[in-house]
Length: 429
Image (cartoon, rainbow, N blue to C red; front, side):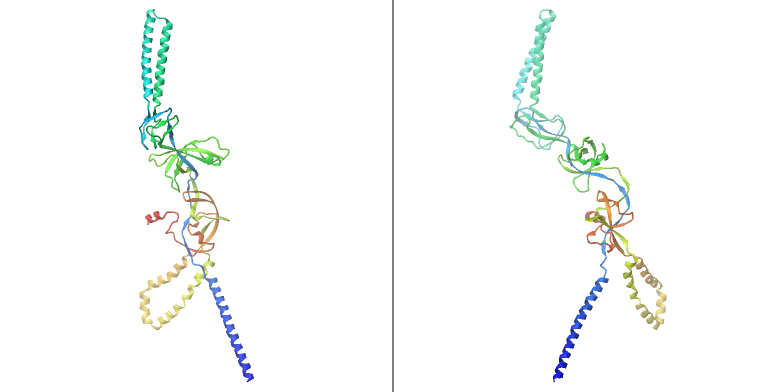
């Protein structure tokens, strides 16, 4: 009885050891299999769009921020005091040169002018009479001089009162577009009171500044392009002035350009982006700005290259597993030679096609990425110049760099171009 009890205990211990060992072994084999599976599993190829780097014509330029002003623009003010009698313009009206814009009350000045004109006529008559008497020898020279001085003073006084009367009118010094009136009828105006702004909008000037290092690249008559934002700069003009002095505090030099504004799209005081175009350069390697990635270690790009034979070997090694099915097919055909001979004779082209498929699939190389650090240069119109690190003919990734890494397998799909807007691509399709 005691021996039986010992035997049962030993048997239970053996069973426990076997069960525990089996569980431990199973877990070990499972973990080892998972590790081998993930170690041999290659990540799926990522789809990217690419472009071929090739030399192109490059138009360098100098970028700046400018302010638009009218070539002729002024805020009109009155020269004398008075009460507004009439306003002869309305907002945004185009007026001609010397057009009357404002009339002040001039009743007193007009009366003074009429009285002085009468006095001037009387003095002129007295002068004529004195001259006649002097010719006859009756009048004295002093009387003639007094009459002549009085006539001259009266004429000068008439001219003065006429000028005072003209100051009661506000006229346009040049043709242009007036703004919103800043006064009302019946309002009393003091000298220097602003009445309205007058701007000649046919031609605009743009003032901007560039660093002193770029001053040697500028000259009078150079082409300038303007825009409100982005890469589109629809307005073209030319440089008309370069300040001969550099600001010692900012180390900037002031530039002035003139731009035609026939459609009136440019407005004085407006902010614009300015680009001064420099002479074209040939054989410059450029890439879309989307192809360049900036990091703490520098700027880099991804170049698409064919995979090396060692990297493509795992994919090619999987194909021989399909070959054992061929002998079975051959045995079945040997069992029925009468049925297979006509088939072989009728479909020689199919056999040739089947034999050509593996060759065609084998010729298609796998593609991998190579991370290349480059030195970028100037940028223009969504393109960036690559000074160092890029060779002509390299196939460079233009989209999806954030999820890529060095040595990763990729598939090229250029149906979508990230350098163009979605609307343009839809129109092309």
